[in-house]
Amino acid sequence: MDESLPPAAPPSALPPDARDDDAPDFTPVPSARNRHDGWTAQRQAAFLVALARIGLVAAAARAVGMSARSAYRLRARDTLGSFSSAWEQALGDGRRRALDTGIARAIEDELVPVYYRGRKIDEYVRFDDRLLIAALRATAALTGSTAARDAVRANGKDD
Image 1 (cartoon, helix red, strand yellow):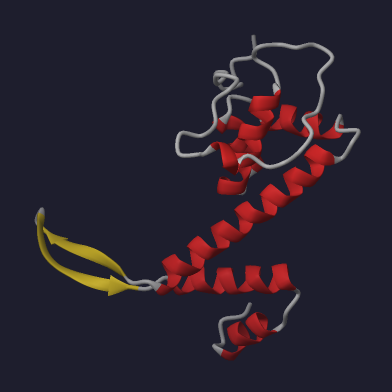
Image 2: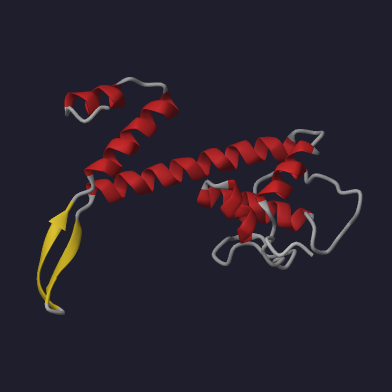
């Protein structure tokens, strides 16, 4: 058995905070062999829910106890295109969620403690400009808009 693969998750397991209505509407990819540790319909739905939350194929596959390689093979076997369409939708949702999180972290202040000789003596507010610039570039790439790119250049932060 390949030790690089994560342990298999229960086949009916959705992420703990997921609801049944979080699962996308798609036709599962049929399998030639119905294995309890393979890509069951429930595991495919759980993968799509995780992909919509995380935005990364490898992490979503690990969340359901599968490998990214097997997820891509499953997608390649999708003859109807339903799973592939749901995959693209979930991936887009996950990336938008990650972008929103990045922008929020860049804009909202973060209190950073200052320690001296093991004691907290002060704290200061830090904003993450690099994260904001990366988020603006990603926004420009996603929307095809030049407004975000122009905003980055106006601040003199463009490479």
